[in-house]
Length: 265
Image (cartoon, rainbow, N blue to C red):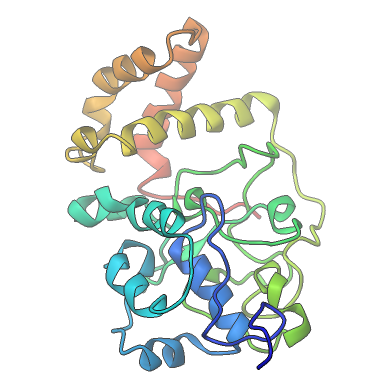
């Protein structure tokens, strides 16, 4: 009997979850490894197709699809709890990248997708994540070739099987490379700093379950002073200029970014 490995795709083998990878990304890599559209994979395991896999009942999905397979349970546990605050408080759903039909999609960093194993990160699902904290460049919200969104529920099986391990590097609509970046307007350093501060701030808030219970679109503005105090407690070396910049940015975020996010082009 041939040894089961990533070179002989079978549902007896699953790719290892990666650092900060979201469930939709892991399932997408599974689909490409086995050349299966999403509905076929879910039907095979009697899983009800979710609207948004990342905020669904992940422990149940994982239990079914990993049955009898040696997978890193710690990585799966981290993946299952990434958006647990959102599953417990549906008012937080407004923070996700979703289109007018409520279909989930991701933003992406072309440099991150150029890595040896491209995958989708936790932060890429969130509206307010506008600058890659690794590469300091603007996140993209659409394919630079066809202008299509990278939807979490799509599997582009037109991508050759030989490229299955790097399938998420290619557009789910036109199959062109998402890492083959065309020149785009660069952010000014102060704009990049502003976005990274917003990300750092909101990361503190969203990872505190006691705070996420009341963090909604309607009350974020009135909560800013209290939330900033908490941020300063967690970041004691934050300079007063950063505090003022963050206050200004959060006011703009409350008024514009979350309610009417604009795509970069």
